[in-house]
Length: 252
Image (cartoon, rainbow, N blue to C red):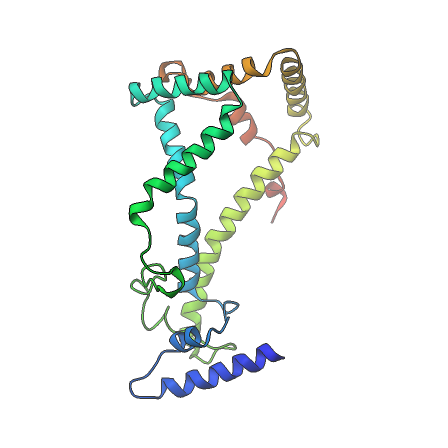
């Protein structure tokens, strides 16, 4: 009840200041009053949060691209250094955590010249909020709930939301399909594939039990870092995994 009363008061103040000269937008009033109305859908905020998540995982993507370049032997000098570092870490595994923390310290030192000169909570970034790319009459028009716009405007926004939700639905379906294929390995969805993977898992378990961990790690690392001329064009296990059944085949 207290939150609803606070939201109603913020809406009344926003409507009054919208009629002032010069008018003040509702977003500015909500930001000044520190009103948490994030439960209301906003396409601009959704885009901003999506790009925030993208920038958060940009380091992981950059590391993946760097590792892919190493596996393709694009730079021989870097490849030699990576092999030497990998062999050292395999022979002395107690240095792995120390190396990781030292790398984190080096990254922090590297980012020091680009540090913020002001406290971050008083800095507003219009580029981060996507205010410069949003349409002023559409994406910046923060509608009320329930809507008070004309039916044609609501229909345009509804069609746009369906198009965006369709992309999200496709990605969610692909993730669910891959997970169901992994579960089908042990659920006998395919009576021919499950025995094959059971035999493979048994062989891997025996090899891991009889072989020292250093040798297994070294072989796996050298296999991942093998030169391009030793790489085949097709992966039998990957193709077999993509042919596994999932619940997507039974959906209407």
